[in-house]
Image 1 (cartoon, rainbow, N blue to C red):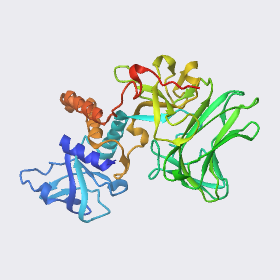
Image 2: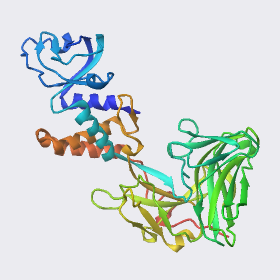
Image 3: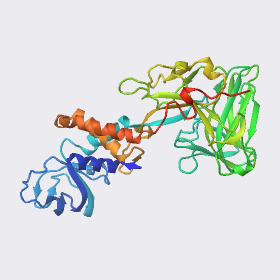
Image 4: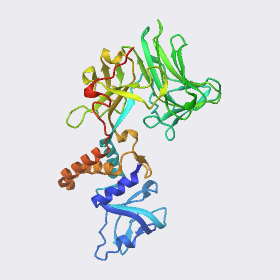
Length: 425
């Protein structure tokens, strides 16, 4: 992972806007650094109004304007340091490159410009992709619920980790709208860790369990499985929920990608990160896939065997410009929704969507070279002194962006000339 410190130091190196490292010592009023300040030809005002940055400090000690240089000592003027001593990290940047007022926001804006291809599920289940930071969207019964971002994750960055505290414990999704008498298909990825996990569809209008499917592979402990069930909602069912549970009092399982829908559902809200659905020249950078397990259409199968079907752009339309009040939405045609197989959305996701950088140790998944290239492009548009480098830096950014883009094929594998898979009754 790339840290804020790495990006900032790389920018200082490539732009030649200052230097950084471990100073010999720092007193209340000056920085002694023989290696950096030993040039006898420098005048006293050589670094006047440059910014001294000490990211390990707080308050006014983080950034100070430097004043005069005398020998190997750069003065802070009347602004004194509270923390002094030998071997202190220190960076120095030109007056227009303030470390926290300009450079840090520049880096975060660069993460908005840099992107990667990202897939997630379309689902009426709130937090069905398990990407929320906490399990707050789910209600637990006889279980403990946490989000796992380090050990067992099927897709994305998180999964749901459910540990029973009593027999038949489960976590239940928020209620979502359905239609009476309509068939449905719901799927979930599960990694059994202890015991036997199961999934249920619940009629929240009447409070009854419509269907239960159990992980029937006892040898599947430690392997991702695909649970899939089909059924029909009741005559009066207008609200439903999904339960993810296990049988034993101490059973444990990891869950991910809970998805599905009822037959002929048309309209979905897309994830909030789907904002770069067009490229810079206006062409589409958004696509949808149907997913079918190769080993069977219902039941319990290995998650790692599946077919992808790229949906024809003529079978859906994207509605509305995304905003805080008006999410991006998609409408699917009747033929797309007939079979009920899960749908994946794939689009360009900015690295900034995973979080901004504030502390020196904050990390991003954006590769270092791409983050730096994007920051340089933005700076070239904002500073007159850098406009002559703009064309070169744009080429650098395009090259780095292409290097990190996934190797994706259109149509998807197994689709000869765009033909879709066919499911026989």
